[in-house]
Image (tube, rainbow, N blue to C red; front, side):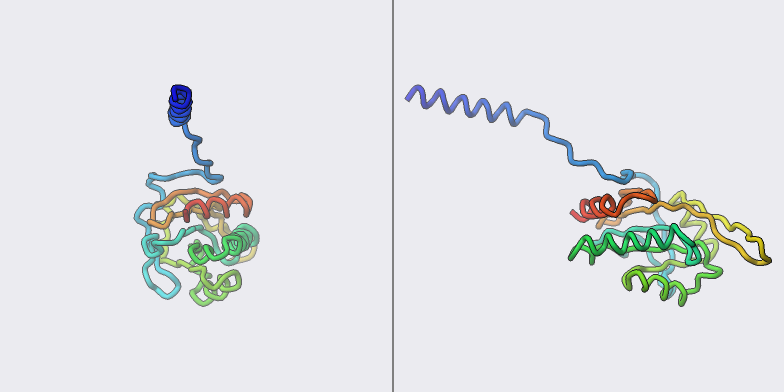
Length: 196
């Protein structure tokens, strides 16, 4: 009986020691964790139908915002293609990913052009298109850069712009900055973690 009691005390002591050990920290995000920052706070832009939108409209989903333009030759279509693949990789949870594409070229990117272009990637992707003042205000909240760059021909131009993405959690809080060039696997893992 004494041996049994001693054995139980040893097990209890061992369990106590194990319980006092520091727990392993959860795996870090692949993107930059910007939780609690002012980035993207209070932004709002109309969608292509003129309805004002913000991260709060997508509560229950992970909303990914990025700035670009339809005539973009590489970064924008690459990013949209990546996000299309991420949504597919998420399986059923893909329905809880909302991509929000903010045009920095509202002069050329009409609502019709944006609808058609985005639907080629995924019909659920939402285009946001504000007035120059609305766009400037939204870009400022995200600390995003964009500028018109004149082309060689008269009236021709392209747009320089920030290439990263901003991910909001299902409660509508900004959580991650995802760099252009991150792998589809890393973005998928980060989105999956935000979805819980």
